[in-house]
Length: 365
Picture 1: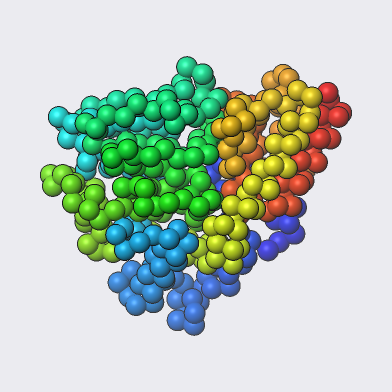
Picture 2: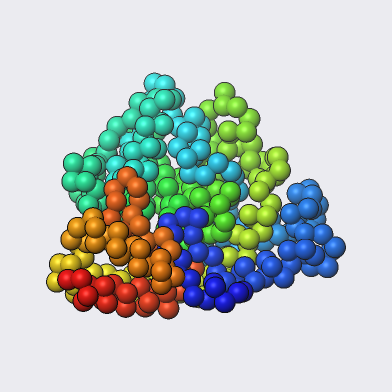
């Protein structure tokens, strides 16, 4: 890759960093994939060459996340935002209710969308605390009448994460893991369904991964439009219509890269080390930097913090851009600063950010 990439630190929240070696492999095979004389973008999704890539991606994800044969692995489109609607369309009848755990903007959007199809119930929320933490497990109120219980495992905007994910307590547990899938070990067997947009830890934008327990899918409504039925895609191996073939190809390379990093355990160890570098710089700044998230709810993927004044925040972001750091401005809805340290963000980038944080505080504190 070019010299400019070597001097750029990508902390964007999504689409986010991809492993350089993956991009180099894509570049090498972009015009002629494996000697077939075509780019994979030009190949039929019905042909054996693409189907081999497609099926290998499913096998690798199963291996990395230890997904049993009791689950379907689907490659869909529309991002998590479409899942906000597709989930209740399939599983929330008008005379049923579903429980939602509110921990940030995306869980709010998921709950709001579900209300279009049936009743919702807030099983726990920290909205009145400005989402500085996730609820404790003891704060969750269960109801056996729920069709499912929905949780957002990591909250990109507020920088919080469930250190221990909740149980379903007999209710089908659904998780939006868009921003922390594959970043740490997860017991898939505890969930009826997991969904995730690919553009943070799995690959480029345009692919949505859905991991759904087969017996849960049997309870889906039958009066849902064909393309919005999980059953449609499960029966066709996600090949009912033309899938985002190029995105799935890149995702397959990211999964192979993840295996070379030591799998999920290796990535989790790396992610803990990377986040600690930045959190330590915040904690040791004598109050110059103020983390938004309570320590027990801190995200290992999205580190959110404030400076003493909005002017200093603008100055910090401006300097960061000058020095090759991208994506450190906070989400427009909350302001402040945010560093997203997804799987593909190198350790060296986090060391460089730690050094920048220390130097800026020393010169402006």
